[in-house]
Amino acid sequence: MNQHKLHNLGNTIGLICISILLTIAFIDQFTLNELPCPLCLLQRVCFIAVGLCMALNLQRGARTSHYGLMILSALLGFSISLRQIFLHVGPGDTGYGSPMWGIYLYGWAAIFYCVIIGFTAIGLLFENGFDKPQQKSKIFQAVILLLLTLTAANSLSTLLECGFGICPADPVKYRLLSKPL
Picture (cartoon, rainbow, N blue to C red):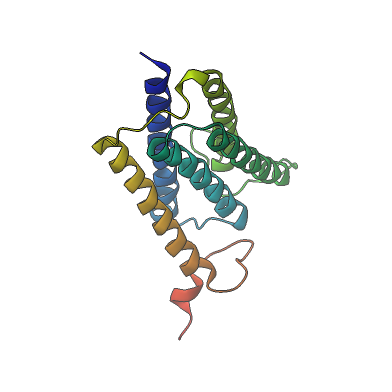
């Protein structure tokens, strides 16, 4: 397999994983009625930014600038996740939300951001696959469309939760759905 195909495969798998993560966050939000806090929303934005960089690699060809933006987005997401972890490490703190397999979603986010940074760094080592012309397959297009749909859904959900003001630190209801217009 040549390096160009490795970039395509890695970005496609990564984009699918990002879409799965965002879907799990949505499932958690709606089935457990646990609205995301402002830090959770920022972590979602960083996952979306990483996914958009992967989509750029699939649409325009793999570029070091896309990978650089991916690493910066993942570093920002990791720092936000760490901030949230540090907020909940005190004695008697029950954390925010429900844990999944013993780890809270912001803990999982920190782990996934580290994985993203590692795989992105590995992708940068395959320099013969950069700036090759793209063949736009239906799989690439479907995965990119899925990310864009999840991005729109997250945007709408955040608007309903926060309205046009500052998001509440501990949200318990959708602000726009509970106020009379």
